[in-house]
Amino acid sequence: MTMTHPGLPQYWALIIWGFMVVLSLWALWIPVAQTGTQRTISLTRIRFLRPTIRFLTLTPWPLFFLKLLMVVIFLLIIYAGLYGTPVAERNLTTVLTWNIWWAGLVISVFFSGLLMVCSMSMGHSGNLAGQTKTLEKKQKMDRIQ
Image (cartoon, rainbow, N blue to C red; front, side, top):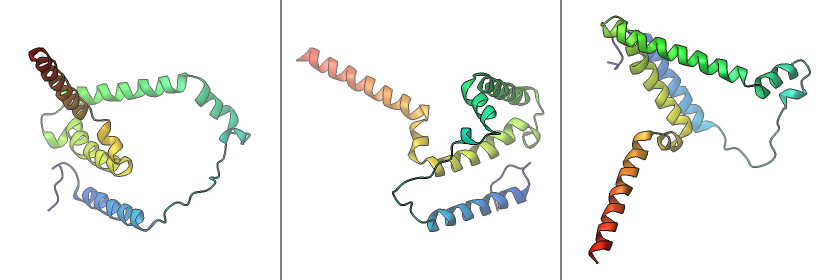
């Protein structure tokens, strides 16, 4: 029995499982990179790509439109969650959150390691609260002495 959302087809779970097995085996058997010189290719040296690469990297408009597109998609997902069907397995927001988002989070932790954990705000908030309490206790002890 696989633990998937009721609206998600069973073969998706098998595809993801197979992908994770192949990815794990690849990570185990790939040789360790040797230190040395790395070969790089500058895309601006390719004549027919040069104008496109320069446009994408030197002007702010492509990034602005990409951000705008992501905001629109995000708002549509929120709208689907609030005003869409109440049936969970047919609601786009539920499917995206519980199946695709969490699978993507697991895969991103696989590739980024503890870097992903460092970026989580919950850990930062907890550490900040702990440091604040410790500082308050220290100041109180200083006043008593």
